[in-house]
Structure formats: C-alpha cells, structure tokens
Image (cartoon, rainbow, N blue to C red; front, top):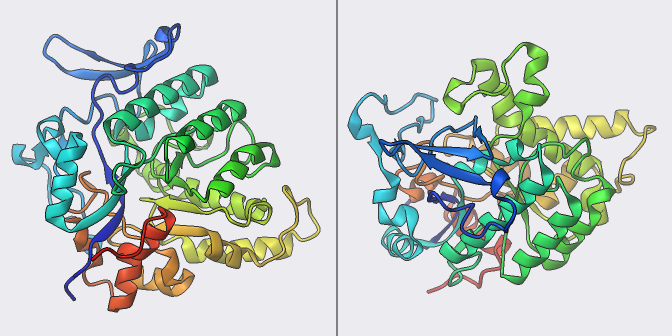
Length: 398
C-alpha cells in the first residue's frame, strides 16, 4: 500500500562535530571536558578528560558504514557484508547528515513531515561521565546548548532535537529540564538503567518527573551504553570496558541489548511513577519490541506475587500491563513483528523509527511501513499521528 501522507520519524540521527561539547563549556571545566583530539593524520579520538571514550573510540562524523548496511530482512538475514570501501561514508561530507537546513530539504524530498533527532557519539558517553557527576552535568549542559543552536529543540515544528538529561544529580537535572523546556523541547532523552543506586521512579526524583508531566513532554530511552557491562557483565566474567565492535556475543545479547530498557520500564510501572503522574508518557526508541509481551506478563505476575511486599512509590491502582499500555509508546525495529506489537499494546502506542542515517537504519525511512500488515488507518497512526501527538504537532497538514 503506497504511503500518501507525510510521515513523522521518531528516530533519526545527526553526526556531531569536534566541538559539540566544548563550544559552550562553562569556564573551569576544561580538565573534565568531553572533547575530541586529532592525530597528525587527522584521526579523531573522543576523550572524557584524560580518558578515551571506551565504547566508541572514534568520531562517527569522520567515517562510518552507510545507511542500511546492517539492516536485516524479515527472516533476520543481513542484506549486506561490509568488506568494500563503498560500504562506508564520511558523514561530515554529506550536508543533510550534519546541517539542519539541508536535512529539511532532504525531508521534503522523502515525504517526511517531522523528525526527532538523536546523537551518534552522544548515545554512549553519559555512563562513563557519571564517575564525575558535576562534570557529567556540565558537559551535557554544553552539549544541549550546541544542539539547540545547530539543530533546535523545536525547529519550524519539523525538527525536534532531544536534549540529553542525566538524573545522576537530581537538582542539576531539574534545572536543566527547566531550561530546555523553556527553549521549546518536545521530547527529552534519558539513559535507561538505575541511577546511582536508585530506581529512576524513586519518589526522590519526583520534582523532575512532575515538570515533565505538567509540560506533557515525553521522556525517551534510546539505545545506547547503559552501563550493564559494568554492573552485570563483570559478574559473568566479561570485560566491561570494550568498544562497541569488540563486545562479546553475551554482551551484545544481554548487556547491550534489550534488558536495560525492559528493567527500566518495569521499574517505572511497578514503582508507580505513572500512578503519581497520570499525564506522564515515556517512549522507547531503537530498543526493539520482541520483549514487550514477556514484560507485560512478568509485571502482572510480579504484582500478584509481590502484593504483600513493599511498594516503592506506592501501590498500583491498575494492572501493570494496562499501566504500560496507557503510558509507554514503542518505536520498534524495522524487522520486529509490528503487526504483533500493535495487537499486543494497541495501535496508538506504536510509532515509526527509521534510525536513518545509521548503518542499522533504513535507507529510506518510509520503508518502515512496507509489508507490516497494517491497514491504511493503522499506517497513518503508526507512521504519523501517534508521533505527532507525542510531539504536540497540529493535525495532518494538507
């Protein structure tokens, strides 16, 4: 079925320049800056202070696999083998990868009404910076100011760059949230996983969640470095500080995959975050969706089996799976069973996410809607209207 409407893509990316974290860094924070150093031959390596960024010890803007290089077909078979120079691109040389006006022109050509923008390098830096919370917050503040200038938290009701926030310092997170909301942010990014020994749904963090709920702005958990290799991998004999392409099969399957977001969403529901903030919504992006039926089942069972236990955040008034369906929206991977996901949580809770222009993403974002077994009304909801609602966009444009 051809798509005859402008899509809203909830998962697109930009490639950061060398000074994305330093252009607006506050004086006195230079020793713990997230910065890029280049060798004599021009090779770039990102650092946090004196330490290389272990998860991605290179700058993606310089060289990375082309869009679609890692896309699998519906049977899970990869469509490309990366062994030729033509399989790689230099993102810094492609205007719509790095500049917003060029991105808007590209979107016009591709039938994309609006898009949420996520980092590339920025997806894997927070966990390492949490070793110094003050430096972490300072670097994220600087990054968000660069992001607002270069892409915009809300640019022409079409581009929505998600500012990155960290709960590793609650008061600093609240202050930064107030700033980005005042600047028009329509979605904010958080790292999945526990926060300094607390659940993100611990009532300690309620001042942060209260502001989001009042603004009707969703919090989003995008795939990234969640720190699970450090938290759990060492208990299984794995070395935690590995580059993304050096991760072992166990690390890729468990500690860098779905488990962190599953744990996080379970905590948000079962620690009654949504009972305390009924208007709050969250979004999971690029974390897949095969886990959704499992999570719904085990949350409901956990609530029954643990009914006499301690309820951090207060006792739930509703069945956990129903709470999930009222507050959590999922951007599945293109090779997930999207028809099954719609049937499980409802069509209003599924959105399009292409991951363009990352190598795991689609060559053409509209391909996400092809052959997924939805009728036109469902395609409109998944491909446009559900994302538009979360971003507080106007009705379908003609």
